[in-house]
Length: 52
Image (tube, rainbow, N blue to C red):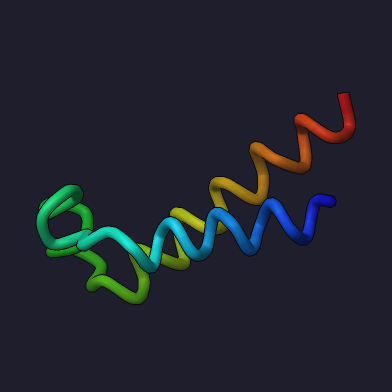
C-alpha cells in the first residue's frame, strides 16, 4: 500500500509543472532536483502516517 501511494505521489509530481507552481524552488534547484526533494518529503509523510 505504501509503495502504491508513493507511485501515486510520483505521478502527481510528474503531472504538474514546478516552473509554474513552485517557481522559486524549481529555479533554485532545477525541476528534477525539486521533484526528488518533494518526493522525499511525501515519502516521509506517508511513512510517518503508516507508522502511527
